[in-house]
Amino acid sequence: MAESAPVKTPPGEMPQALRVILASPRGFCAGVERAIEIVERALEIYGPPVYVRHEIVHNKHVVETLRNKGAVFVEELTEIPEGAMTVFSAHGVPQAVVKEAGRRALPVIDATCPLVSKVHREGQNLVGKGREVIMIGHEGHPEVEGTRGQIPGGVHLVSRVEDVERLDVRDPTLVGYVTQTTLSVDDTRDVIEALKKRFPGIKGPGAKDICYATQNRQMAVRRLAEQVDLLLVVGARNSSNSNRLAEIGTTMGVPSFLIDDASMVQDDWFRGVSVVGVTAGASAPERLVRDLVARIGHVAPAQTEELGGIEEHMQFKLPRVLTDAMRERGIEPDDSRDRHDLHVA
Image (cartoon, rainbow, N blue to C red; front, side, top):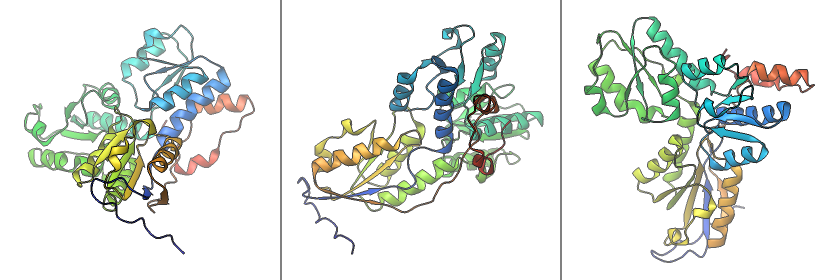
C-alpha cells in the first residue's frame, strides 16, 4: 500500500515532512558516459598523465575525479608536452586544432560526442552543396566554437529571433542551418520559424537530429514542474542544458535553483514547500543526486519516488584507436554498443 503524501506545509513555515520526486530520465547521457570512459580507459592503458583539451564535460566533480586519476586539463595544445597522450573534449574542436595536433604528431583520442560530429558533417554537406550555414546556438559555448571551426567558411550564429533579421548572406536562396545539440526542439522552434520565413528555401536537419538527451530531460522536467513546489537542478553553471532545465521550472512558475551539489542547498528554500522536484543535467553524475536527496532529508523526513519517463538505451562506440589499444592489452570492448551507434568515422 502506498504511503500517504505529506501534509501540505503552510506558507512561510518549514515542512514537517517532504515528498521528493526524481525526474526520469536525468543525469548522464550517452555522449557524456562515452567521453568519461575514454579518459578513464586512456589512463588505464597509457598511464598518467593524459592531457585533455578543455573540460571533458561541463561538471567540476567529473573533472576533479578524473584529475585525481591523472588527467591534466588544459585550454590549448601549446600546454601539452611533445608526444603526450591527448584527448579532445565531448564538445568537439575546430579543424585548426586537429591540424595543429597532427603537425605536432600528438597521439590523439577524439571524445567528441557522435551527435556533435553529426552536426559537423551536416554543416560540411551544406557547404558542399553551395549553401551558407547558419547555426542556432549560444555565443562562446565550446560546441559552437568547435562547429564554427569544422565548417568551411565558418557559420552565421543566431541565438534569438531578433538575430535572424540582422543576418547578411550572399544568396538568400542558398542557406542552411544546424543547431547546437544541447538545444531542444522547443528551444529552437521560434528561431527556425523565423529562418524559414526569411529564407523559404532554407535546408536544415529533421527533428530526429535533435539530441535525444536534451529533449528527454526537458520533457521530464516539464512533467515534474507540474507536480512540485520547488525544483532543484543538479548541474554546472556553464552547462547549457542544465541552465535550461532550471529556466523551464521558473517559466512554469516553480521556484527553481541550479546547484553544483548538495552543499549549495539553503534551508529557507523549503519554507511553505511540501513537494520537491529533483533532476540533473546531462553532465551531472547520479551520486550528486543521491547526495542531494540525503541533504533534503536533513530539512525534514523525506519520502522519495521516481517519476516514470522515457527509458534511454542509447550507447556510442568508443573510438577505434582506443578499442584497438584495449584489445592489444587483452581488454575486450563492449560490442553491444554497436546496435545503438551512429557509426561516426
